[in-house]
Image 1 (tube, helix red, strand yellow):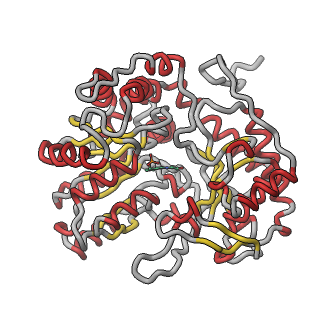
Image 2: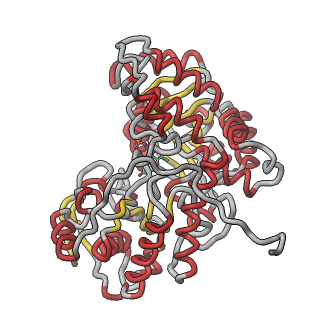
Length: 461
Ligand code: PLI
């Protein structure tokens, strides 16, 4: 055997308990999809075979985390689990103060209401749906300052979440630093396809914003996944641990919003973390209005314990390599099959390029929504739209936003599915791809005001 032969890796766990899943019949899926108004968010999970809707709150907890649940201290005030969580956040992320929340968007709500004034501008490396909405509800306008490469699905840039420093500085000069309460930096960028930001770029953003006295608020929802890419791709980082890289990222920012339902391996939970005392004081006061007392926010004691343990597990190298490796496995398979996907493959899912797969549909005919529906019909695999429907409407003109990226996201929950599941998913997508010219577009029949992708209903054109 040659010395250089590539060796396989495997998941760093074995399975202790299983949850049966049901393979549905085509007629059942047709009925279920119609009842759901062709929106995969409105399907019942009983009608789904492999669920790649989201990686949010869908991951499998470890036996240690389940044991942690039994150690829940459900005291209204001063629960010991809060202090365990605070210790874990200080140790692994380095932020000084924390305010627990029921999930990420609650932390976004609090920070937006405190820092943003009517007429402010909030630059970010591409928008995220809930983040931008909370900025807008607080009177701000989101401004995309990500590099242009991020909007091109075929561009192989290794750090597509990098910020374009010229775009950022032009905005600061144009609007004035006092109109920019903070820069929102996400690790990794969900809507770009799960793409990472480089440490080099983050340091440059830090230097630029410090020059103007503007803080950085970090959307750290998938920070460990971003750290994996830095270790793998960026010069000078291969010898550092994931934990060290995560801590360095956080040290370049002033505070963070966290949806712990992703990286941190819990089914519910989040937090706001800040270093500034005055900001902490305001956030701690506000959380009692919207979430709960500041030592539990929106979480049960047991959930804070599971989160404290999940944070530690999330930065272990073997875990993160297998997590990102499984997504890569699915992506590579689809690339080999010739299916157009966003390149490079991101960390939390594979993003199908619906404009390329359905060239006969205009963006108004909702290609990604239609493709997600077709994949569900084929196999019971549930994916989600990340295109014109997710992008919503311009809040001033009321017109649809038209994002360049029109994608279906096959999102992989952590530690849940095997590679055999990934094979079934890839084969279904391949089958749909080869018959894609038969897929019809969709139109809205119901559209709610906020975050329309969750609850809209559609019909076939
Ligand atoms: O779903 P929440 O409220 O815990 O977190 C909101 C949120 C904030 N930032 C980022 C980057 C997210 O991905 C995010 C939630 N993402 C979901 C639900 C998803 O399916 O991607």
